[in-house]
Length: 432
Image (cartoon, rainbow, N blue to C red):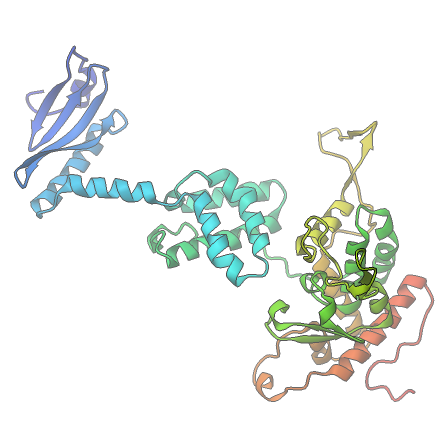
């Protein structure tokens, strides 16, 4: 190879008893080991020291690629830098770079937990897919294509909504990584990625027949008594599932329940009127202390049964209960039954089309509208933030109107459940 390296010449190099070098010129060389391995090098002298910078092994690094690396290193040397020192520094920085697994942990602990009440949902979503597929890889190595492929795989298993939720949380995590200089903005793999599935406009509301069926069928489903009561309270009060499941006795004062600002989505305390049916679902606010045999506050209305410390049940437990009941596995002799295509056969024990707990809140709002209540009153029941200039000048909390709306909705709901018509008088009516 007197005229320079060629692919044919490099490929033909044979191992010898001892390693040997071949040099093309300008510090570009190849090293052949007794094992047969061949490695590219840039050899130069920097500040009186001879330096051997490895450019990669052949054939993983081709002759053409090795020439490019040699050219880049030679330019750095010509500009007064030590390319080997830079290479070693880059290796050291890479060894310290966070894996996706460690990034998920840091995002949850330092961002999601302090700032989001729903941090456990972020953790669940990330652990289910991103952690499984990318966990051991460096976060800086995740590419836009990796994100697209992950989201497409979630859609292919029939979960477009989950794909959208995954993308939202993955995007937040990598934005956090950019903010904390864990990765550079140019390395953010979510830039330019669009929402993977069409956004659901969220227009599912149960009709009267579905409400009656749901109310009657809950008892026959794999749903605990507490979760059944929570679902019914969501329908009755039109409040957010997470706010209902976290209800504490200290928030209840007679016929009013105040959702504190720290638990409210819009960070504003919210008063909810509790109708007789709602109070029955909540039940007694005191329980007997087994040790002292005295009555004591019940603490959480829907306590978590999986931990000893008094905590509320998780928001996710409501969604999971509904999902399980919409597709209860059918078994024969204790074994899962499968159809001809190999899919598990299930039964919808709730007896209504697919819905989410949040749809029950929309259902209540829809019926209140049908009863004649104005959007402004319904927004107050729902604790929607006022928009525009009215937010500054209208400070009315509409307690009286909210009570009337929820009382009217209770009467309508009871008529749906029992099948007996009742007289519903909308707000503004002159009837007694």
